[in-house]
Length: 142
Image (spheres, rainbow, N blue to C red):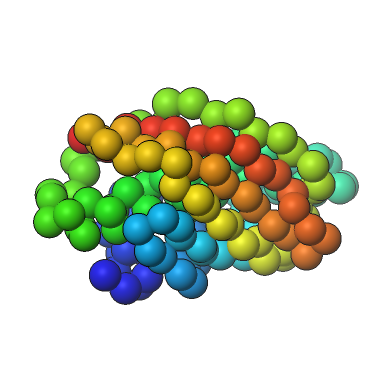
């Protein structure tokens, strides 16, 4: 399954799709990228005059690539049906650097486990100045 096929199967669309592409995928890892466009809906009020990407949006970008996109790939590899529902279940993430409008970020994931529709991964999001956030994420696919 190619990266473009994975992105097409994601259950999101703009303005809530935070994946431009998948650059690498295997059983154990996935890498993807996204450019936070200056006209994103959330910059108008966060923060006035000094826009910064909200942490919850960075977390969403990490989950879309590191959990959902990787889960789609893994289900496809196993010959199983794609999920009808996805649910984010937990996170333990450290936020280290801000991400600004117009910034390209790279998300890299290392799978911890995937069984019975539950996926858990170590995820890192890098911006132009280094690691912006990293941690453990988990979710469910049904």
